[in-house]
Length: 377
Image (cartoon, rainbow, N blue to C red; front, side, top):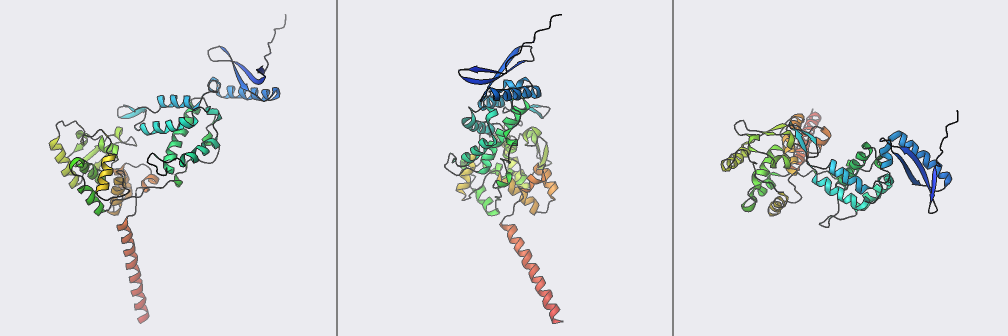
């Protein structure tokens, strides 16, 4: 029998004076394909060929198909598949995100910088340089950009690159090839708590065009609810008789339903709103737009500085702890699942500092009195 001829294919080709490693393979559909990758020389082409072969054997066709994928292309696919409004089945999120607007803005910033880069060429050092550059870029208002803001941007990039790894387009994320690029310890944690005097001034400023803020602020201060949880409340979520608010799983950050109590002053606010409601299924506060600007104006009129609506959550949790409630019970009400995160919301205000000093003053006075008695014997 005649020996079957074996066709040998060179592992390199030369085009326009440049050497390219040439890897020929058959894809999943049975189609014969080839992959060319620039090499330094004919000798180096053999090393590049071996690398392509290993990658193909270990990771399949996708890794070769994505060899020229740019970050802009990845970002487009990632946004289409991941940064979309959440979809629910039986109150459980099955796809998308509850909060996708901010990640889309961060992704746009990343595309402006890394858009033309091939994802396989982005290094740990490249991301590190971007981080430093972003920190030096002022905000729209001309202020110093916070480390937390830069970290949120990097978190979106990390998620997009991990998505590429899971999709078989990238072997390893550059975030995993060096020192951590995101360190929560470097961020300045918010510890702003509203004093009783500031609270009175703020509520007094909620009149006229900003009268609608009063009930929202009291809800935030007395329940510790997040802004999104407050603004999505509907009347079926509220039981005025038992003085309970049920926050649906679809409206919570943790995707877990929880119940919060209604204080006497909050009950009065809700009853007044209910009396004016035209439909028992509508939004409690009737607001579908952002209240950030109106809240900032109210704070300015009240002479209150560096205070955000989310700080009402800090205030509520701090007050519960100061009132003697067990931390684990407070966590259940506030909707925290991690103690490490919960501890960030327990803040020390001026009243607590004064009490701490008073406790030590009493201790010192008692010790001095006991010493004097001992000496007099």
